[in-house]
Length: 115
Image (cartoon, rainbow, N blue to C red; front, side):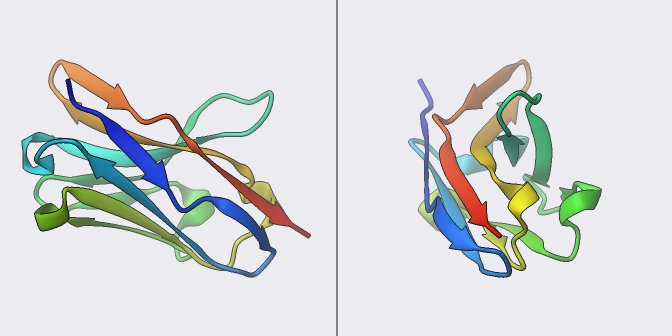
């Protein structure tokens, strides 16, 4: 059973930066896509960024130019570098890995951005 473990969340002031990490228990080369989602209180879980096994990336419009997703196959880890953080980025951030027909989620890490 594949497990994903996120880390790197915390409290930061607006304009600050954080880097989230998602470590997989197995080789991430087997995943077709990995990505980050977030869920704010009372809202649905939305996609933030994704990266395919070939290295292609995709971002939500709200984070383009501020967030960067990357992967390190040797460490079986993906990252989300978040710069110029805004209070509206506050949410629980979840890591996801997909390989048809499976999807696995991490437990989530809280990101709180103060004004």
